[in-house]
Length: 294
Image (cartoon, rainbow, N blue to C red; front, side, top):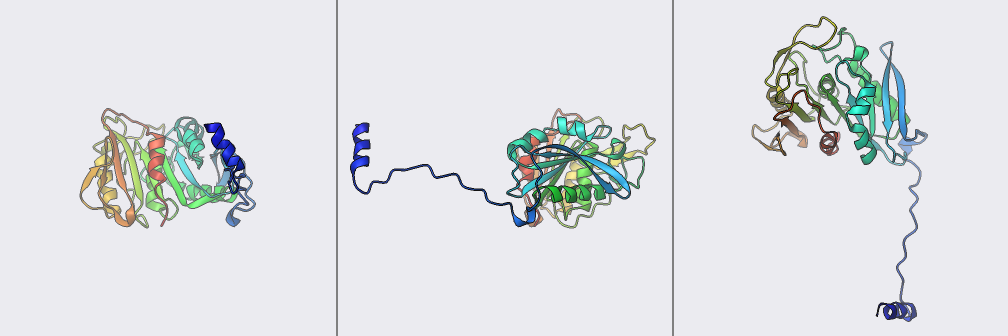
């Protein structure tokens, strides 16, 4: 019966057989990205900031072609670790290669980030300027969607993500810090509401979940800092983002304000038995990718 039907299709006049369309040519890259010929791979880059040579690692995903603008994530390492450690352990490498976005892993001076009250030995280091320089240099090499630049990080690196939300909301579309909270004295005044996805462990012995004083575990004689706590930071960003006072579940272990200005989101996820815990890179990306600069 199937053979007879096939013969009828071949013999009846006007019958058109379905064929697979030829592959489409992706065409030239967008004009804004012309001449940017970086290939997929992992690179070490340097950039000069305030007379210092600063370093970062750059991941260009396996499926990068340069024919379309893609997001860029800044992934900041923890205190006393490194950009290479973050590249190899944060999980963003695997997600980026699967999802097709760029990741820059900045390297802090003395393996630390200056977020104001903490955590570098020198308060004169401008890590916000460094982050801006990294984004500018990567954008000169690769086809970056400037409306979809994100910041994430673990521990002190999470503090750096908060710092960028406070001081560079014109550049960063959303942040996903882990194992860190806002610190008294940060002086946060973002230029616009910005989406925040924070991950915390309730049993954290280094950054106390309920807030209060803590001494950074560094070889330097740094003063004690005072954290706002996970809930305190959540409420602080609710105010900065002009959110409603009501909250509701935003997934397992997560809560979010029901509405925030300009469609932004403010979410806190808590691991009940988590300690100084990292976050899930895939969950963070699922949140970040939904946001872009207005």
